[in-house]
Image (cartoon, rainbow, N blue to C red; front, top):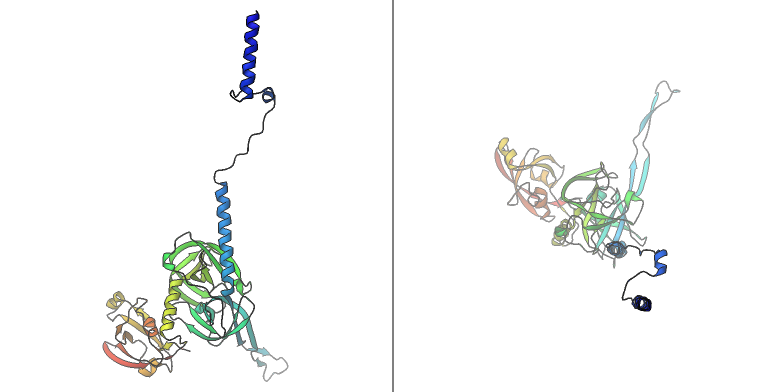
Length: 387
């Protein structure tokens, strides 16, 4: 009996020493009746999500802070006359109708956006924003300064225009390479939606590339077909036209130009490489705002259409502007211009009649080869300045 009691005491002593030293992982008496709280589970990707959100937010804020001083609002100033109407005068039986003349009305409102591309006052915007030759335009900068637009260079091939204001030491934006864009890439749009909310910032992604659209302005009633544009879900509204579409480095990769009225979050921008091409041509002309002008409105006849109609490929003249170089040269409606100064006129963008004219300067003499009723004629025109 004494041996049994001694063995039992030794066993209890060993158990106590093992539990004290954690050699044995047995529950203590409090553990048996007191339940410990479980440690909270941390999702494996929680830290990554927070990191991504913070990173995207910081990218956008940095781009906006850097870019805003170079984004401008464009306003229009114009005087219009309302249509007159006839009023009945019941007290004059001999002349019961009297004409009420129209009244003059001044229009002054913000209609679009743009961005500064040169510190000496060159601004990029959409052509449809500044399409009215009879109106004057004004620039409102980020620091609330106003400048009158002194000169406008409108691109005849794309919905783009270069504006000139009298200023210096302006903040500018750099053009990025739009040929390397990828679907899903982060983009930021800045502009003046509805012509009212200046310096509005929206963000999104590139939703599509190489789209074909019809762009225009509800303020100016101007419509133009554009190809190879960028689609984005960054919110773009009327008034955003001409503003920059920026990448995460703060580079302009597009010029906001249109929205899809039937859908939501579907906006479009002209690629920045098209802007680069325009600026290159502008510089080749010595930075001259004068643009060569022929004075015809035409439709292209492609090779297949030409064969089917037994005519030639080229630019089919549908209208000749009165007093234009084309009229003075003897070009007539229904003529087909097949060569412009030795180069064949085709439907390709770089060989269209408008593109070939843009390569010339005001005052250049050009030889036009035309097809008229089955006969080939050579005419000479002196290009004037497009007003």
